[in-house]
Image (cartoon, rainbow, N blue to C red; front, side, top):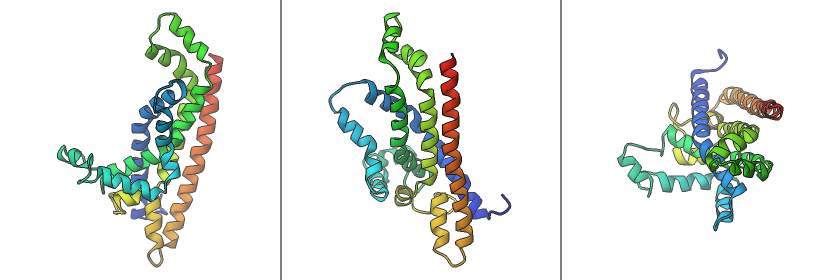
Length: 230
């Protein structure tokens, strides 16, 4: 990456770090919520579905502001966490939190569609053999929805890489600490002569986004064929 400057490399590395952690942390929750929405019937199910998809509807700046109110040092959750040494506001961890929340709906939707495509009779057959719900999920459901899980995780990673509005509102745009790839592009465009650096980062963003989409399709097909073959 000799054609990138130190600030650009730093922003790229931070974006990869933030996106990776955002995806890893939200994936277990994404699988659980997707399964609950696809298989369970309970009071408040539609409310949960609405909350999950709310980040797609709200302006990202609003989501970032709500995160700041909630997880800021004076917030109802941020205050107690800060006493434990866990701080999100104006930290890279906050950028990961914001990116994870913004990417969560895409992850849940991909996994939920995969779960809904699984015949419930297959799961019922496992249950009649004496397997627990957790065992049925791990041995029957999870292998069959693996393409959707992988696709959802990759799409979430790509979305996290491109997150800007909620991130900059929640953690600001601090070089070396919270300045991710989109924030760096914005910062470079605000200074004279920064267009070249911004263009380089835009090209990298496009490559990563397209690569993630292609990888999602390819891995999904490969896993689907392997599952069908087994």
